[in-house]
Image (cartoon, rainbow, N blue to C red; front, side, top):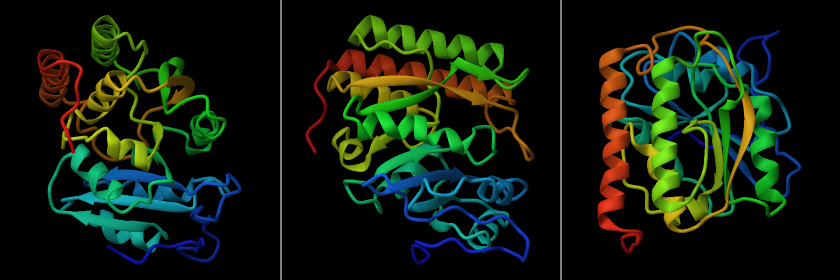
Length: 259
């Protein structure tokens, strides 16, 4: 892992700064960006970050075989490298480095989410109103073609099942979300790929954490390959895994495994 940065730096003269200035929230705020083969877009995502929000910007590179990690470092981010591919594996690698009091904000690498809206996710946690805050693309505005019909149906089905079984009601499994690192550790997350987001919601429901959704904008990726929603085979695998996570948790009951 590279040395953690606490100050912003520029890639080239005239380029926008990567925002890693210490924020004024009273708690460290880590932006976690899982990335696999995102060399075509990662620099744009980092250089578009707003200033004054994040104390750490972490790119969790999980097995990329392109220049994602190098470009992220050049753009001023801290890079955590894990050879294992899988969204959940990348998130867990970042979690392992974060202090318990840090608020973790998870953002996709493709610039489909607006990092400036992270304050909408952070503030309910700081005010003590919520434990887990999810940026809902369903309640917010999704650009045409950004949230496909099979994604909407899958979100509706998964969140409906969680509501029916555990009484936690939501509209989305959106990956743009925030939670304190210490609380996330208490969830004892296990999934290392497609089931990460739904597992977090299931486990938070089991522990009766306070969930809050806020509407967010969601757009098309700026560049690179859409590895899941734009690929029917990957979408089917993701959907199957999501339903499996819910079914397994329901079969095992509401008790979480001991850490």
